[in-house]
Figure 1 (cartoon, rainbow, N blue to C red):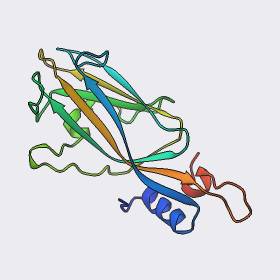
Figure 2 (tube, rainbow, N blue to C red):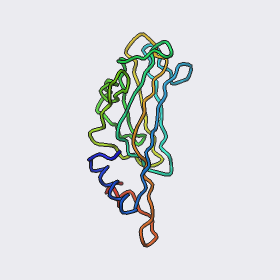
Figure 3 (spheres, rainbow, N blue to C red):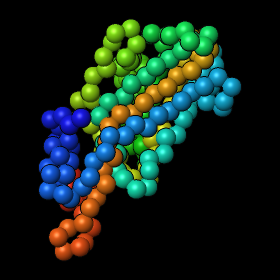
Figure 4 (cartoon, rainbow, N blue to C red):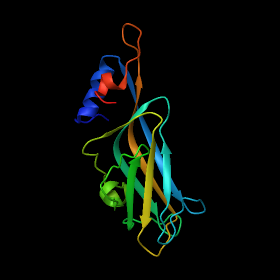
Length: 171
């Protein structure tokens, strides 16, 4: 799913030139009852998502699905805030945001929107996802999915490896 952002256009162009191979990929952060990432009443769990060491990741959309206190009971509008950052310390927001403002849902015929500007996340990075449940009711399960594609760098015609900075003009 290529859009029209500079990151997506650069990846598409590099793929057409044979400099990279792009593959659809999803990363997830699961918050499940009975684990140390459970969302208890007024809970504040954190989940770390590890990006593979073989490819950069371009995140194009964030989607969330939440089950209420009973398994199988969809919670359409969970009163949670979320804060997301790259482990290097780069925050995605200036302050925690309401989950629905960040992550759409396919539940109840809704359709999440793509990110205004997809994020290039370097290989071997970690994404930190911190939640705050602002209610006195525990949630059974929440899955936050980072949708996008992995970028596998190929070789230049001289045999040297193509680099992230060559493709995306970024570190």
